[in-house]
Structures are given as C-alpha cells and as structure tokens.
Image 1 (cartoon, rainbow, N blue to C red):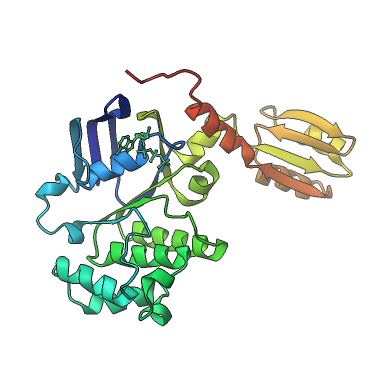
Image 2 (tube, rainbow, N blue to C red; image 1 turned 60 degrees about the vertical axis):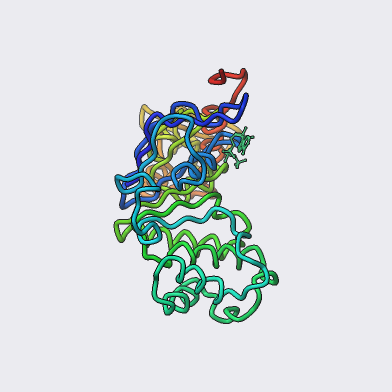
Length: 299
Ligand SMILES: Nc1ncnc2c1ncn2[C@@H]1O[C@H](COP(=O)(O)OP(=O)(O)OP(=O)(O)O)[C@@H](O)[C@H]1O
C-alpha cells in the first residue's frame, strides 16, 4: 500500500504538489493521471525519498522511504529509462544494482529473461533502443521482488507489442497482490491499463475513481449503430436511451451499452452493419477534469 498525506512541494514560486492525500491499494493497478506539469513525477519522487516534501508525508508499505531497511525489497521504481550507464552492459547494470541492494547476482539473469532481454544482456546499454531501456528499467525495478511498484510514464517509447507486454506484466504483478502505481498523461492509455485512477491537476487531486466511474461521469459511452433495421431497433431501446439520428440508417445513442443493443438486435433478427463505442468520450471527461482555465490552486 502507498499512502500520501497532505503532501506539498513548493519549488520557489511554483506549487508543484498542493496538499495531496490519497491511498493506493494493493492488488490492483492504480493510474496517476494528469496533464504535463500536474505534479505526478514530483509526487513519485517524494514517495521514493528523492525530493523532500515542503510539508506532509509519503509512506510506502506504512513507512517513509528513508526508514525502509531494505528498500529494493519493498519498492521498485521505473522513473527514467535512460538512467543506466551507457557504457555498461545490461547484465552488468543489473548486477551492479544487485550488489548495492544485497540481492543475489543470479537475479540479474532471471530478470533479463523475464523482460525478454537475454539476447542483449552483453550489449552496452548505450546501444539499446528506448523500448529496450524500458525493459531493462523494469528488470531493475523487479530485482528485489518488491511489493510496491512505482512507474513514471512507463508506456512511453514502447511499441504496440511492448505496451501489451507491459500491461500483461503489470496485471500479473497486481494479481499477485502487489501495489502497482503508474503515471500517465493519456486517459485512453490509463483506461486500458488501470483499474483505478487518481486524477491530478495543478498538484491537486481532482478525482479518485474507477476507470468505469470516470467514464460514467462523462455521461457514459456513445454508441454508433448502423443497420438497415435502424428504425425498428430504435423502438426497442430502453427509456434510458437518448438517440441522435445521423443518417437514415445510422444513429448514435447514449444511456445504453453496445452489448445491450447487439443483444436486442440479435433477439429480433435485425442485421447490424456497425456497432461501435466512441471511446473519445472518456478522453473528454479527462480533459474536463483537468482543464485549467485559471490558475486555480496556485498560491
Ligand atoms: N526541480 C524542479 N525545480 C523547479 N520546478 C520544478 C522541478 N521539478 C518540477 N518542477 C515544476 O513542478 C511542476 C510539476 O512538475 P512534475 O514534473 O511533477 O509534473 P508531471 O505531472 O510529472 O508532468 P510531466 O508529465 O510533464 O512529467 C511543474 O510546474 C514543473 O515545472
């Protein structure tokens, strides 16, 4: 579990984190979402003892980072994928971290295999692609088999296969009961990855909700339906549905999920030529939450 209480960080005139309080539960993936400059990295750095808070507290598994006796075994972090020394090989980098954390050196090879870098283990990190650096960073994060994981924008620089791979890995880690906390500035990315989302704006928490709840706040998804029997289908929709006609055979509808529309059409033998959920609505919900028309929250 990760806990932040009234955490505040001021850099001169800039209030980067403003009286932030939240809890990140174990056993699920929690997204830390906010536009650039919202204070996500600063919060993570304070959790990891890299920056001192101006006031407030940050706890990992019930303790301040500086009070952890064996930090690599409690928390793993992926902050800057390019932090490994470019002149070292991937294996040497991980072994060097093992030595610092009093972790058996064989963990380096175990993790290189787990992240799919065994073939590049003896190449210098300077020649790694960004995606390979991310994988090496993830291996480093997991060396101590920690219960809490913090990842700052981990999906940046990964190709689509890499994104799916990382999502599966994080899901597996959460299913093992670990606390998985990752930041992003992209709502759609979070929606596909996280179970729960903390939204920050100007250093303040503006939402602490499930991804489904955030979608609900946007008024639910809009579903686009094209069917030669569209008029008939409309008459079958529940009272909660709000229909907007776009073409003689096409309407968009809110208040009823796509699956329910598909089931209705199937039950009445109505052919569907298109049944699509507009995911952009979720992005809209996020934009609305994080829009900053005035310098709200800054003092
Ligand atoms: N070391 C620093 N000195 C001065 N200001 C800083 C420092 N680090 C961050 N800031 C400022 O604090 C605010 C929050 O930055 P932070 O990097 O935590 O945001 P973020 O949500 O992680 O954004 P991004 O996605 O761009 O990394 C920004 O206004 C930033 O310019």
